[in-house]
Image 1 (cartoon, rainbow, N blue to C red):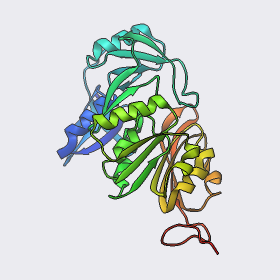
Image 2: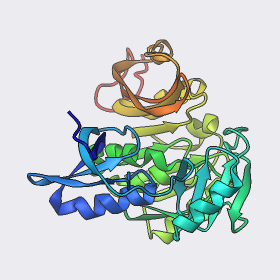
Image 3: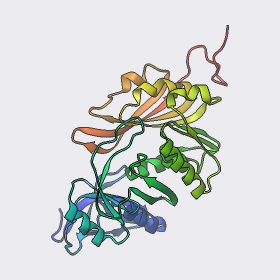
Image 4: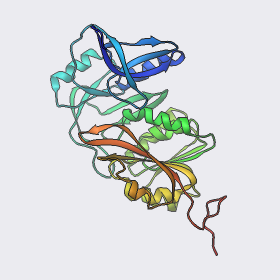
Length: 322
């Protein structure tokens, strides 16, 4: 039972040794519920967060003093993204959050072959560019030129935790490089491709900014990658949620047997693209919901272990010629 003066909320559980780093990350991503007081539980600290994330659970927290409510928004670096075209609300957000310099409203969904959105400046500096810090990695972002979602930060860390030292990784739709630079911390080599020239320019800046030596930026249509890249990869990231299915044959072509493909997609029902996945050699596939995207739509990832095609060499994955 929730006591008077307390409230139940989603909670991130962090070991006390890394609690401050986790808290700073939640603040940076705009997901920490500042109306509730974090609490200790044995060797862990529980932080209240505004919405469900992978690994969260429900917990009871003490309600802090009431503060004037702010419009719903998401933070990317120094930019607040509002869900409504609310000029006065945008001004209140900038006044309440000194670290922010701009408040934007997205006029459009992600659109076009370059995956960009159009924005209206509601308050602050007239810019769509900022620097965003995610788990110690600095990203120069321009939201009008390249798609970027801070809500995938936890997902990027999940993938990083599964990467084995020495892996060769391909990011087929890399954007400004958030998956590529994250996985480069453990992989031996990451090829990061994108069709959008502005995104690749930002990615190159981020590679230099973070002094990352094992990421190769490639300006290319994903459909052309088999003709450009030598060999096969141990892991492939397909972060193209609107319509990744046409590119599945390319990913299976470029992934070695036993390797992993992480296919991100917006779905309306469970198992929505399983039929398309099973047209290819599959050893195992797991569907995971990451977050709610809109009414009736979920952002999901399919973790696919690639199987071996009939007539393929067991050691190398190469096709055997009679």
